[in-house]
Length: 398
Image 1 (spheres, rainbow, N blue to C red):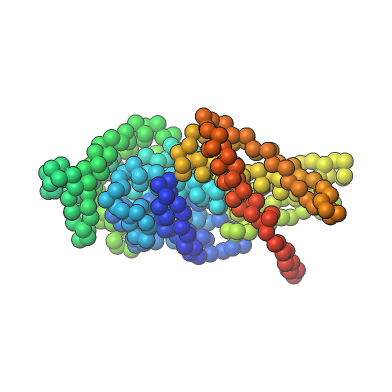
Image 2 (tube, rainbow, N blue to C red):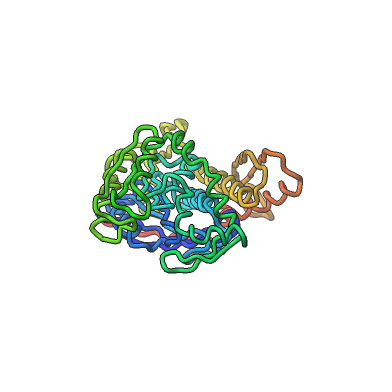
């Protein structure tokens, strides 16, 4: 397992700290990415998260685990967060993965993190499978952890409570938000494969919560008893068992039954067939095809390499604008970007000119549209095209 420390910005502007665990074999690459949500007031470094991540990477599944706002190494004030903001953090993490690597196919949550994953799942279209570990069937279940302070919170608007031996400020808005969550309806309409793992002797979240979730969910759904495990899976044997079960279960729903040859994170592998221009490309686990038109001897089975370059600029521009619009909560409904390029003469020199036509749909002001066009120039592909670029080649012996 190889670890990569990352940060991303959530919709509220806070910088959240995370870690991606990649499969160790770069020749194989990764077949999918999982997004992991830790338990209430925990961090990404809880032992169970590490064991689960390790087992998933052994199966070719990369894992992003991060600290929710106000916890661990992430910015923000925990007192100002709530269940809804945790769900938003998960969606923002999924969007970051989609922009930087690949959208997550598997969602995994421990305790209240599992409940948040269930609430977020319908808004993460790429996820085909969801797994929970010791998770409450209702978010308000956590209120029992500070029930002795409930009167103080209601009277004063907030109170300091001890959770796992650490002081946290809980505000009235946190409790009110917990009671607003329509989790039962969300689970019933989720339409994703669901694995529920729970210990029958869990004293923090009773196993009856697992029964409620299982009853609410539609098939395909599965339940696995974690037998003698405690709530935090503090025994390595218990967390390792849960991890192996999870990895084996996920095999059925993730792309490709077994990890296949592909590009390692940050790598692109291209192989051209003998006697043709058709080139099979693997970009970080995603397969695409490039070719040349029949007029120059190709089979026209895919876009040309230069067309892919246009597509890279177009898609990067669209994603960058969309990310800005989400961050600013702007009423942007659709971005369309048309890119072509050609050679032109400028001051006696022949240069390559990209023509980019951007269409923004939505009830936007002229100022907002102008700002989005400025943001378009910040997309990573645009910046790369305007930077000094070198290609350094090596010949690999076989």
